[in-house]
Image 1 (tube, rainbow, N blue to C red):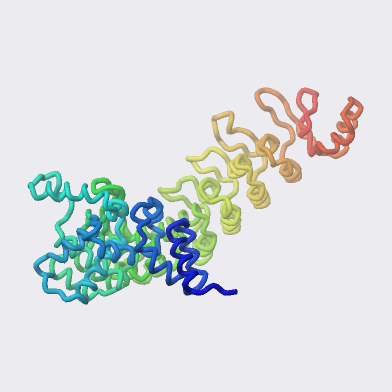
Image 2: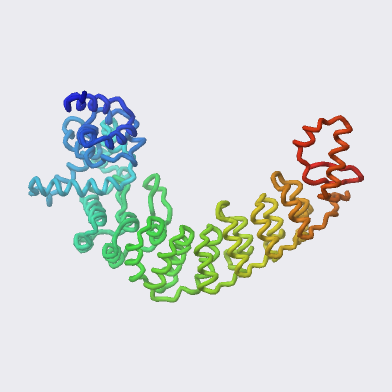
Length: 487
């Protein structure tokens, strides 16, 4: 029997006060009734005023706009820093004659900006924090210089309107704000929001052109934790990381050809290569006024280090780059860069492409003292070790290190590294010298099955059970001083 709608509404109403927020988000997918009831009731629930779960989950809270509208409606009963800010803005002289529709539209734009802000949600929306806000407000009225961190409501409004215009792609409104004196790299310490940062992340082509024409800098202070601590951020790199190809295109079309601009673009394109966004690199080559061919070596290095196999293949094959090259930022060679820096899951594929396009598996570059094969053995990379040997790597080379611990032959490394036993036979089959000395003592590696069989029989005669010997699976022997050790 199907329960009446009223019963389900009561159940949902109780669930809103009890269930974790994550479960409530998922419950909206049950049907239209659940979605409508939760969307309508959750933003107005008193639990959100007291429950710390909301503030811990704020970045994933899907009903931010409804929640903030409810805070504004409850301002007289439970004021908070956010609602007070909104009413302070509405009291500005130039806004006193707005009708209800205009006020609603204005508040929606302010909410657009606050949603993108990084201010702690608990500070903005709880009544408990309101007393702190009042103390600050009174200190400003007294003229305390230390309390003048926050921008006036008028300045905040302009920044908020700019943030909203950027989000909506309204470059005409943004231009009006610029004409009225908007500081395009301005920052709101009230809600920790920066229109320029938003533009770099989601601004369309025309918005970005408007920002650049208004003097938007290539590097800006991106405030993270407080209004004092910040990092110097490359605007183009932010666009790349955000996948904002359209906005980046608008910026590059207006980019100058001076040294600072090229440095910013070069840095951003390295980021694009690391992320596998070759389409952004090609767009930059098409739109930028200067030739970027001199950056191709850096792109190949970055693609190698980050494991972008398709980009490595393209640069070596279509751009005819040299797989044995070095750059000022990568003096150790591309193979070693792949072995050292590339993600494990992509490492073998990158090394294979480099070897197929002429990379020398035996070359040891000056900053490095080990051969690529030694490094692969130390890392336990069986697949890469086989690739190097099959491509001509010297199985007996020990590099040019003066450190005795780095003079171990690949065969020695194979027998000392767990899981590399299969490589012993592989290296011997490819000419590895079985005889070597370590710390003054002679060693010889034995892989013949006949000799191994004799040793297994001797162990049985010494009292080992046949099952134990069989389970031990001796793959090879290392003879030292006339005695044998099974491995």
